Image 1 (cartoon, rainbow, N blue to C red):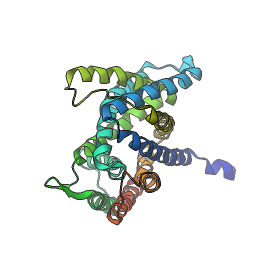
Image 2 (cartoon, rainbow, N blue to C red):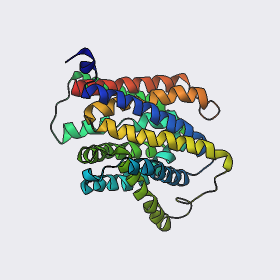
Image 3 (spheres, rainbow, N blue to C red):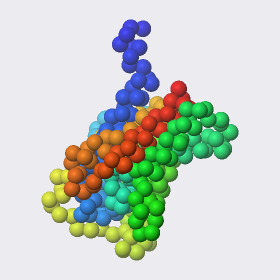
Image 4 (cartoon, rainbow, N blue to C red):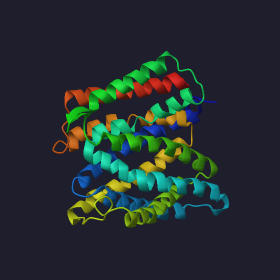
Length: 300
């Protein structure tokens, strides 16, 4: 095995794909944050799902090899479409609208934490010192970044949306891993999940009051940002699926670096929408270090 082959190991590819997924996720959120300032969460979620279904559907069908078709993979991504692309995308945008991109993404990137709790409480794992240190850093970082008394609360109003989204994301990573390992067609499976989400969202819209789920008018001035955000998001979905085809334990902690990218991009492009003070910046960095410590502590 030569030096080049040693470098491009399966684990190395997972790491590189995960970092790229983190950057693309940050780019998507910062781009759509401007749209979200003028459009409701349900409208943006449905537009994003339609965009994913069309953009990735065309690409996925063009490159699809029918000989590898597996209905089980479509079943996993169908469930993912209902839980993550439909319900959680709406929850995610509600959280981002209430908390701001940097604080919101910091919380939603805490996915390794619930997996750690399950491992300890259900599977009986005993976390080492590095994992315990990482957990403490995560809690301290989130408290530091999100402590902002409002409306009689200790934390900024809307934090519940972010926490809920984070918990649903944790289950979504497992579904992506199962589906991708059955049939490695990232674009087509993602398009299928988004396609399932659109009619599911419309079904929910007929049940819930209009003040909760409703379509809103979208101005033409927002179209370029929406198209750019959909492109970023579509590529991100594919890259994330590829990274999660590897070890979830390796990919998810690395993708937790998304808040750092969001913080950097927000400070450049969203100065008029989100003010990042020193406390928020320190909290985000502490959270990232905690996630990295949990990842290294559990999986070396």
